Amino acid sequence: MVARVLVAMVAPARPADAGGAAREALQQTERLYAALFYGVVLLVILAFGLWALVRMSRRYQEHLRHRSAKPTPVPDVWSMHRPPAELEADESDEEPDYEP
Image (tube, rainbow, N blue to C red):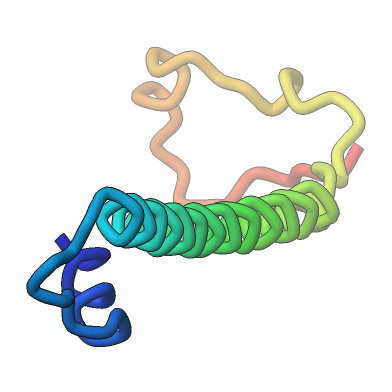
């Protein structure tokens, strides 16, 4: 584990006659380094999560503010609708007049 490596690098070498007090101090140091390590990991995860949340909310706001397409200029669109039977019967090449 990373905490043990850090303790080995920072903590002084154990004396040959290490008693209970030295062992307890070493365990406390290991717990402290483990707590610091996990705290830093949690802070990094929290920072990344907040960054992602802010980015997604800004993009969603941008999406909501985006202008929609212009409305159809004709007030009654269904009046332009012709069933397929009428289209087949109409052999003219003229384009229909859509103005009211």
